[in-house]
Length: 291
Image (tube, rainbow, N blue to C red; front, side):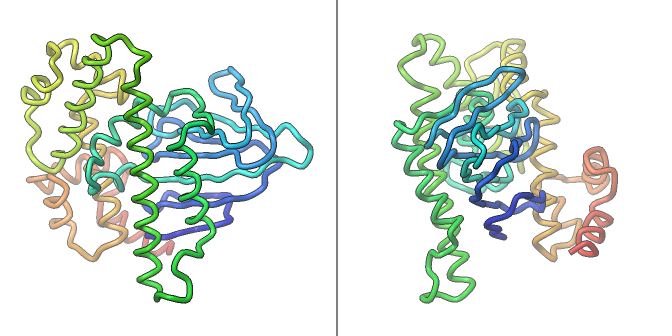
């Protein structure tokens, strides 16, 4: 885990990052990525531009981007700019958390959603936790470096708990018809089940049965939710997990392949090269040389 505060560029090194700063130029939340991006407007005025549409932002508003969300620009509207708080999370970080599979499934649905207004209590609680992380003061003077990292991680888990609670209310809210809500909730349950079992043998007949949908309906709904078919989605998550282990551990490539659900080293190499154009061993070598 690596915490970076007060920085404008956030490299994809498999860690989570948080920063808070005043900006005068447009800031972009990337769409169709393997990260979740949470951005609060803390002070000043701005607007969000997404897909050619503009939406006014006010202090306290939260934007959720990344994954399958559209590329979004946050544009300050005053000469002195605005103050933003930005948290960036790799999707695979959620996999080891309680209810992490369901949270990731919900985030795929939420990343293309509307702005969350500050009257949502869960968004306010998340912002306080994110500000604490950006400040980096949690535990200073009372714990060593390892202790501070643990306290920071605990604060991050607390923040994700508020996010889970909030998205559960937003996505399963009373605004939807009961029949539609029931189908969508079953679909999220099925996708969460698949995510949580991604390192094992995912049996699609079991997943489809959990969704309560027919086979054709399920595949269509799944593609709408995550942007691809189930098998490529499984391999994408597995390779993201492998990237994290290649960077952060000294496990052998063979051990990493098995940890991530592959029973064939050749199959692991094939899917890895499809996504990163190099072998896992070459990737680790290049990453360590750059670090």
